[in-house]
Image 1 (spheres, rainbow, N blue to C red):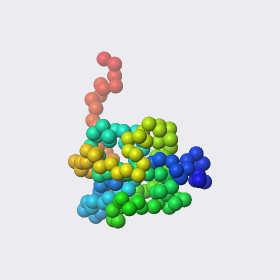
Image 2 (cartoon, helix red, strand yellow):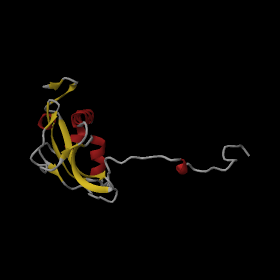
Image 3 (cartoon, rainbow, N blue to C red):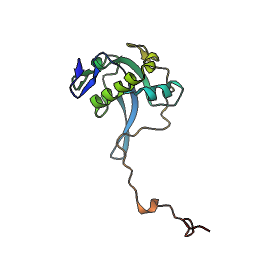
Length: 150
């Protein structure tokens, strides 16, 4: 079966989803949340090389196991309190395409297998709802001759 908005992917296509520890800023407080999100092939290969990450583990499965049409399906390997990332269906289909384009990446984690050997770290917190507000004080002051040929 293929998806109406993505005829190039099918339910039996390989995909990896991970459990990430993220943070949400709420009225001055920072709350920890667990997010289920797809991991593209290039990101998975970087994580397997030891890059520090907020992913606690990854699970290799099929697109049909995590998506029922456009509705996300929580796998039993994930905690009950974990939430799906924004636009999960869209991102899952896009991630599936990365594994279709690079089939060798699917050999890192066999389908139906959980991998928890990542270098888990919360040193750099992933804040999901942070806003970057730029002010005039953020401008870098330059000397008058910076752009002149001397």
